[in-house]
Amino acid sequence: MSYTSFRELLKGNIGVMVLTAGLWTLAGSLTGPFFSLYVLALGGSYIDVGVIAGVRAVVGILPHFFGGYLADAIGRKKLLYGMSYLLCLDQLLFAFAPRYDFLLVVATLDSLWGGLREPAFFALVADSTTPENRALAYAMQQVIPPLFGIFSSYIGGVLIDTHGVVAAMRISYVCVFITSLCASTLRWRLLRETLVRDPETKKETSIGVAPTIDGFRTAFKTLPRALWLFFLLSTILNFAYSLSGPFFVTYASDDLRLSASQWGLISMLQTLISTLVRLPAALASDRHGRMKLILPSLLCVPLTYVLFVTSASFELAVVSLMGSAFLDALRGPASQAMLVDLSKKEYRGRINALLSVPNALAGSAANVLGGILSVQMSTSAPFFLSSALIFCAAVYAYVTIKEPENREE
Image 1 (cartoon, helix red, strand yellow):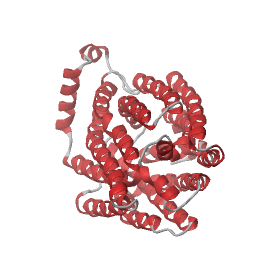
Image 2: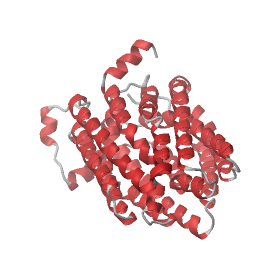
Image 3: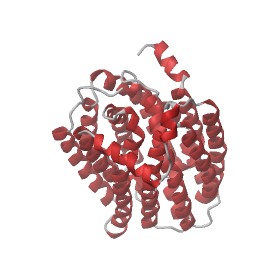
Image 4: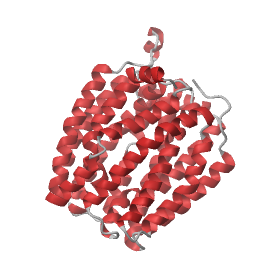
């Protein structure tokens, strides 16, 4: 892609989404890497960490379905900025949570609003791309926003080391509220609707349970076999990653004895790796195909998990997590672009919602299982099981997933 085309892409909706996601990340990176420590500091256990993460994953299923229908029925923009405002308010509730179980309530609300918003988010970004620039657009969405918060995770770690987990996290969540309020307002003012419906179609559109079900039934019948195979791969990977995802920071803190600032530094370096890798990986994906990047990544990720749990020093932990970040960055834009390649434009909101169901159920079960394994077996057990499942997913992808001959517009 030429520099001119790159600049033009940033001038439209993609540019607005990149900017606003960046503002959200600016303060969000103060809290995200340390949330599990916040649960423990407010009186929770490893199982509570898994339960909260699991609830967050599963509660959004039904609103995600309804949000998918609304994104295709009334448009993307209103749903996106409206739910962004509600997610913004949740940050204040996180900031003043008195106990760990209150976090469960807030996480439930967060999942409801996020479930309604995500299909519109996905569809608006997808609609604002072409097959030739799709992976690059997703890479921009994944790469540029984290740059806004590249130093935030380290600052968050220093705050925790200085003031303690609870006080530092309360301050940080107030900061997230302020920046996310700005981002939501910019989305309201600057985004352009991408799904333009003629007046007759609008008259026929109704909102409710019955039309939502009918709309999904129609979308369901259109799914090609290749998309079903991709759905299964996504579900397996979601389960595998969710087994250990919430416990990286707790393992680093409790088992590897890393300080919060060291973990913040690792998070910062992971962001830097993603920034350097995703754009070239996206260009390679658009030019040479998606699976040429997806398969090597999946085959190598398990090695990084094993290296992490067997690390005997901060330096080895850094190497393992840098490797994991590199491989995820290699695969990310190609995976998202391939899902769009296989999805018809008029059903993308609903297809994204359909995919959320097995992903949410698998992720929720895996979060809880990871907490149980940490308590009943060992804190390293979730990581070894994740590693084995990701390897199995790589074999499955090699055998069943093929590059699409024609990409959807």
